[in-house]
Image (cartoon, rainbow, N blue to C red; front, side, top):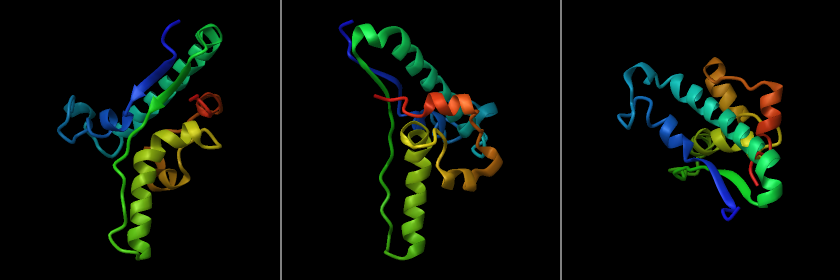
Length: 140
């Protein structure tokens, strides 16, 4: 009852993407397929986050009056030039890094950014309607 701020995951991009073949811990060979493993891991993290937030809000928040969320990270990207190609590349980089874990929570649909879905097609797992409902707004 004394702790008022809760974080479900800290910088999930770092332990999903960097840990899948970039030589960072744990970098387990059987989970090092950079084309799919980080996205499966990220999907599981987002669903676990939504479930933890739902439980906290139902069982503990009314009495504790605390807040719960997630800590996301991104190395900011600026375009090298003002050409459309450089600008769109910088934007896409931010969408894949920050939007991956932010859009499902803070966006209006409880889902991945449309640009990310177009880029990754079948490699990006899909959320069910129930999962989208839990994800949307799952941060105070």
